[in-house]
Image (cartoon, rainbow, N blue to C red; front, side):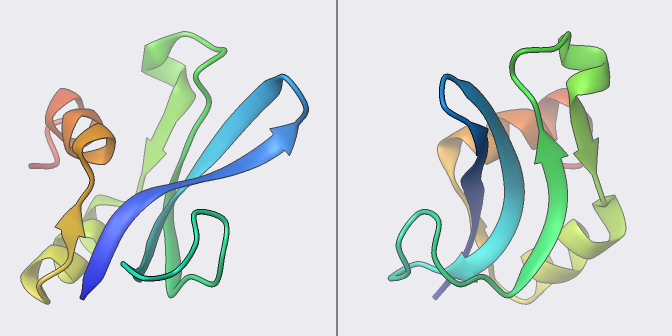
Length: 80
């Protein structure tokens, strides 16, 4: 089963995240299918999120399930 979730990148104590499509059984920072966005929580929310809505819609139509955090980001940015 595919899931859309966050994968942590960035330096120690300065997290940044990629929004990725991956198999549910893969580890958090493991192999992924595609990067569909970026999220930087240390910056203001308006400029901190970049989402590729066309690709996210594509994966949602294919049955990918977003994690709770990603679902809230998608709702805030009106992708869902």
